[in-house]
Length: 338
Image 1 (cartoon, rainbow, N blue to C red):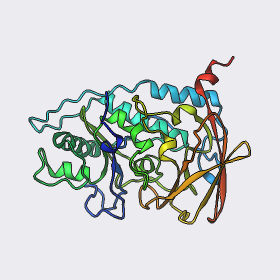
Image 2: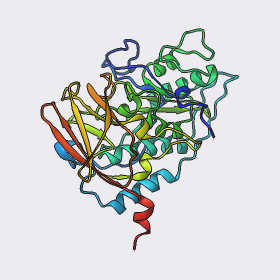
Image 3: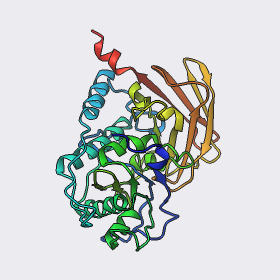
């Protein structure tokens, strides 16, 4: 299924925890952090680790075969769930349990690469996200502040919209779109929410055309000096491929690598990327704050593409300065080797 003519029509990163006043969890007074429309969370396991320089949490000591097997196994089953609702009746219904579990498995597969703990869902947040998904589907548009005259509007749908990543794509497929985050290069907000230490439990809702992921009022604790993506350690080459099948579909190299931190001000950072001693030019962007972490930067490859090999990322003009190595592995080749 093609989710849209352009990824720009699929994702819209519009909120931050500091910049939005509306959404609150009905059971919690603390404000959440916002999200770019359209991310999904997934997975039933992810290791919590201390690998990676300066506590980045990468899979630095992981076995490439094990990383590849885990990644490919998680990516194998991406069938969308069956939606029981109806736009004509303004019935939010629900996505079947298997569909929600597969969406959750996708998010946790991405988090596992960065050695972040697996997320879980919560029924009340699933319900708000489901109402949100119906609202986006019924109106063929995305908004964190939907007007009350929208078809199928409810207070619960509005609460979900203001507390979620939202997409005009069903829940399982939306996850990879969030991670690439095309069209949101000033924030990379969807990706940063998925990789946030503070997020969760989350809520997942989906129709066959739209989905929402509740990310506000997270209960996680920020403990690492930074979280990078791609992270330190073993990363499958497939991560850098197109997330959609049509020619020219954007990739991680198109939107950029990222580093986020709750503790370090990255606004004055300089980034140097080398591969086997050769410096590779990058275009650095200071990302807007408040999406999953207080500070973040993105850096996009200039006139080069990621291939299998070792990439060292050095971040200077911050306190403390840090460095980590991304070991990109071609999983097909690795698994075929005797």
